[in-house]
Image (cartoon, rainbow, N blue to C red; front, side, top):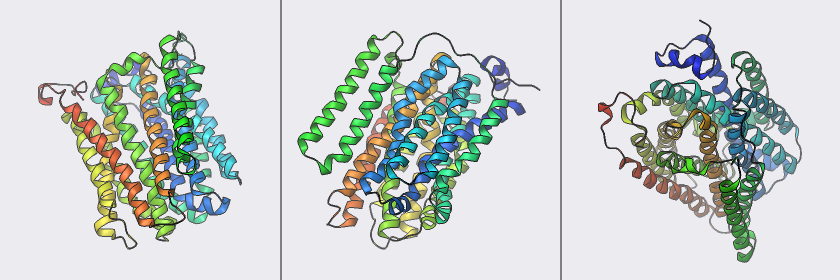
Length: 481
């Protein structure tokens, strides 16, 4: 059966759950790219100490290898989602994927820290267009309900698995040479590009509206200034830090002012009135932000303080990655049965507990009582929360704004990653020339735990909106989460 990847053509087949080979192929392409996006964020983590030693970068500048990608990603995701809605999701997806492949190749060839950060930023920008385009292709192809939940659980499982298992793959590649962590995605991206040209159905954008380039520039500048202020805070005067934070706040205010007045806003602010969507975005800020910060701390702790190899460090993260890879595909069914609110609450508890376990860091950590249980808890948190947040954020949103909803969600995660990483780095490098290193590591992990506690409080508020038992409905109760 010839199956087109478009909403109208696929509605009947997604409802009766008989997915054809072409649809599975298209879904595989989309999943491969989100896997690459997540892989690129995580693989560089294990390689950071090797990059630092080879290129002579300081710890504060080293975090920009991560933040450069995250900010390019998060800063332009809203524009990426809007562009996909207007110009056509397939066109935007494939063009950005080609840029991603080229930037990956250039990143692996750089021998200067500043140029490496620039290449990472370009890769982040390209991912800012592939991620919302891919997610919105899925949400406009599959009917809301079990079919979409199943597709999203597979899609988000690939993203979460890429982020978790990328650490393990990075450990192996870093043993050979850190540049391979940048070069490895190139052939995968090329294969996905060729397959996408064949499998993704051509579709036209809405053709109406415009690009809010000023809004995109304003929000990107605001985030850059915010992260820069936090990173530089330990090294500059209080007055300069306050001035930088005030400038970031002013830019955020300008962005809101622009969005209320431009004819074709980057973000239709009314979409944020949806309580489930707002909670999902806050939830991803916490989940991804706290974990990116924790990962940075863990890499410094395992390799620089304890002297573990890159492979040993990667294997420490393996339990979390395996849990996510094995269980995330089942989350669509769990969301149908229990609703996403309950899954997010349980995931938030696991996230907080995982960080709490790692607060016992010392010079002789126990694999059985600290590393393994902590990683298992973090794996449970991601497996439960990540797919549930994606389902919750896109439920009830019209097809014409799926790109926007997807961009908002991904932006939240990337902004959370950039901001929390900046705070964690500032804590970790404060007093770096002296003092107790274990105390600094614990203080940095406390930052992630504090954000996780806030995330749990936000998740609990979603339970108050449930009025009807899930068993009484044929469709999942998503509006109540």
